[in-house]
Length: 291
Picture 1: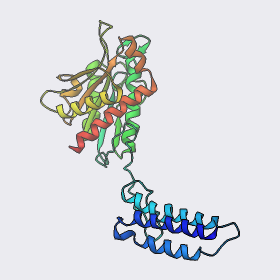
Picture 2: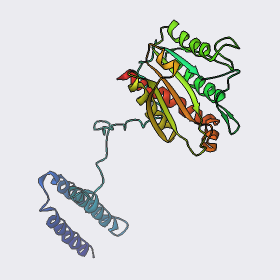
Picture 3: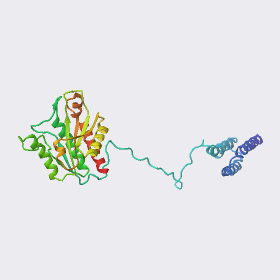
Picture 4: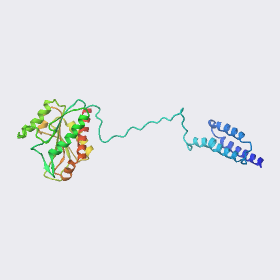
């Protein structure tokens, strides 16, 4: 019986040699391991010799077939060790929310933010929405973003009031806003408004700039508001508004949306949407200063 087992082992050994023969020399060490282990296993065991077969098949698959299969891409990856670590390259971080890193370009800039209307002049009123309230809410959010970026922000108003003394003419009111920008030697003037139209089906966002200057600023701000809000893009245009034609620094007037349109009026009262508008204006300013 024992002789038959030895014969069986020899036949299996011949089979292993025939399999390993064509394998490249780099795996020849596996043969030495097989021969050594078979020699050590030739002593009869108490379990009737099954240990020999266990070791033989273990060697066949772990020492021989494993490396062979790995040659052809079918085996497992080589196990790492402290002396042979795998180099892991971390993936770049995903983009954050919709903000744009200011890279410090706003630090020290003097920005005048002008919430249109206020006090006894509420601006356009429709669909239970007052323009002056929307203008102030977005302007305050923009102020906070600019301050966080290191800018010096001057507000023409921070409450529901007129800028010029109550009872002043419209010309005096507008002149008071321009005077604040000029007195502070502002680097930029941003006037924030809401729009209105007799046709309630009209809606969208537009940005105005003084004729002959600030068109690049208007384009950057308009583009980024649309990116943030998804609003209908009504483009940019030059205009002769008092606060634009009388300021000497880059200046724009943003019409955020139409309070006369019921859907857009609801959006303009929504805190999340207001933040998106402020973020869009901020992003456009950063891109302008980065260019």
